Amino acid sequence: MSPQKRMPKALYKSELKALQARLVDMQAWVQASGARVVVIFEGRDAAGKGSTIKRVSEYLNPRVSRVVALPTPSARDKTRWYFQRYIQHLPAGGEIVLMDRSWYNRAGVERVMGYSSNAEYHRFLHQAPIFERMLVEDGIILLKYWFSVSDVEQERRFHDRLEDPMRRWKLSPNDVQAITKWEDYSRAKDTMFVHTDIPEAPWWEVDGDDKRRSRINMISHLLSQVPYEVVEREEIVIPPRPPSRGYERPPRESSTSVPDYVAELLRKHEAEREAAAADDAS
Image 1: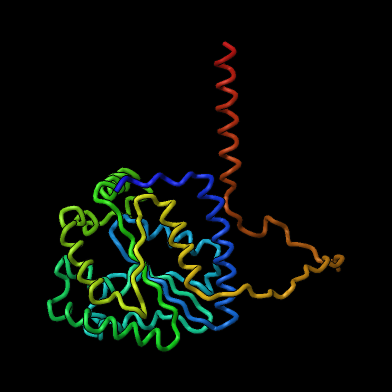
Image 2: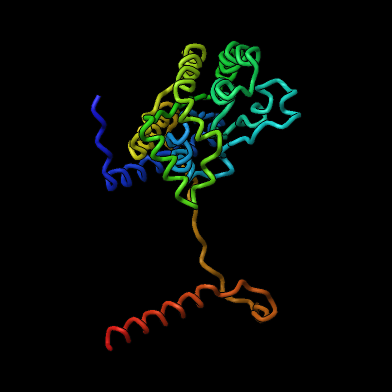
């Protein structure tokens, strides 16, 4: 199959804004209707899960829509029923939860890296569909997305992260193992799909080689899966400011303000500009 043409940036930006406006409408419906929505983001390392979550949540109310990204389980967590640490993060009525990885850690990284036993792994494959059917039967809208990326593109993104100090934190020792264990992760994903791709909560695959295309495709699909309606919002009127009743602010010197760092930047910029102009004139 020939590689897909990359989505033009201008088209991407305009469509993203339109979809994000619809996400705000969806959130208003969720809040008004008391619906409960769980969106699971899983997939290959560097496949674009995190950046897509960022675009989904960018304009949503964090009191209504929250991102759940759990750390490594503690010693206490390991003694509890596996799904127990995730249950406490499920949404109440009127809430949306975006899960940056989820209980599927057990079928992916834990399986490939040997962090769970065979018994724990097979128990998970048996219990996960039961657990998810319980969630759906109770009325939760459960959506599961798997982000794929080619081996070539994944390696390129790893190198980009390694060389970028602003994104270096995204690259962990486990992440780079994805290169040497590519086929192990492929087999783990295939087995996971066989057991957990159920009619009540199917897996939806997202091709992540073109991040623009994958974000637009995923968000568009998410909106199509939530039966939201545009909610009539209460009209808000900003009142006129009343006349002063004699309040006087205390002297600014009586409070401690942050230093005016920008003023120093402007002074340096002006000095550099004047020096450059002097060099050009000489």
